[in-house]
Length: 132
Picture 1 (tube, rainbow, N blue to C red):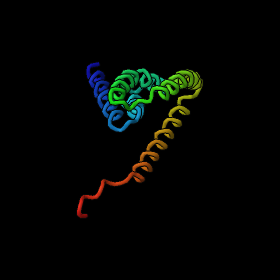
Picture 2 (cartoon, rainbow, N blue to C red):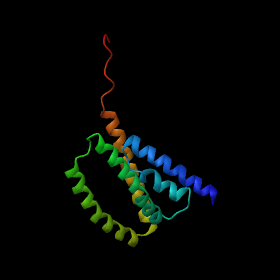
Picture 3 (cartoon, rainbow, N blue to C red):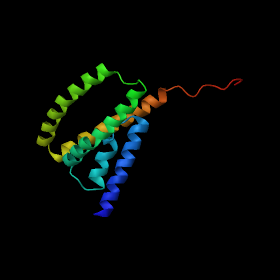
Picture 4 (cartoon, one colour):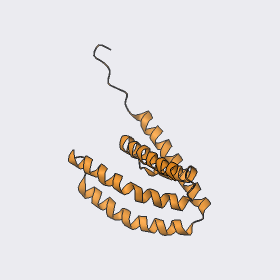
């Protein structure tokens, strides 16, 4: 029990740091770890991840808003639409077989990874030093 609690705390630290550093959702870390390490089912892991990300999203939004980086109108629209589609997604997830959820999540992770690599390759390198 204590070992599992320590593992969950470490998972929270890793997911929070990754989300903050790279701007990716903590679910990219949470869901695979919850299924592979803690043995949760895919639906349980996804639901746990959604609840666990709430404080991270609130804190991250607060920090970014202090520096003026949040476009509140866009955030409000995205938030409202997300609530509706999250409910629809949860209903579909409850109806879907476990294997389909795992496969779809794996495909999503691969697409996300490919997009991150593609974006990194297109990013300009560091500026040249004077005299180079």
